[in-house]
Length: 122
Image (cartoon, rainbow, N blue to C red; front, side):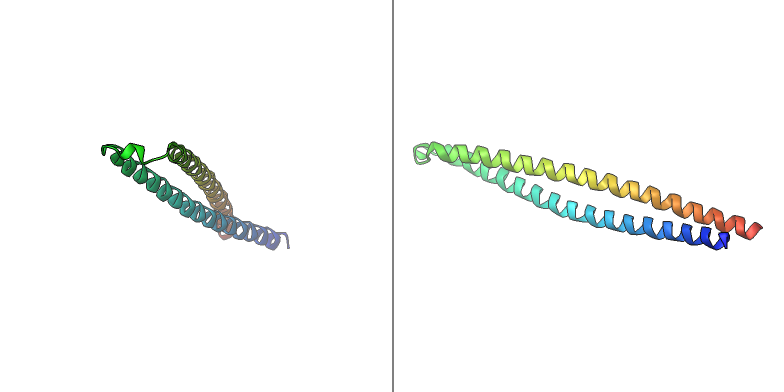
């Protein structure tokens, strides 16, 4: 009876570890999507900034813009930079969680394999 309990416990541990790994992988995929959107937003703001610089070179064009627009552009860049940094940090956390879940899964799988080997040799 103890033999079956041990096998059942090991199989349950492997199943739980695999489920945790799958969940961590999904969270990593979600973090990757958020990170990609943040990078696209950042690129969009950077492209808009480059366009604005070229407009300022046109004679007389500088007086058409109100200084408030420039402050808004600076705030937009800061906001997008912060969002991008947060997305990168969240991705790093999700990647570490998936790596840890993978290590636990491999450890549980190795314990079950070792149990199988000792069972065959006995």
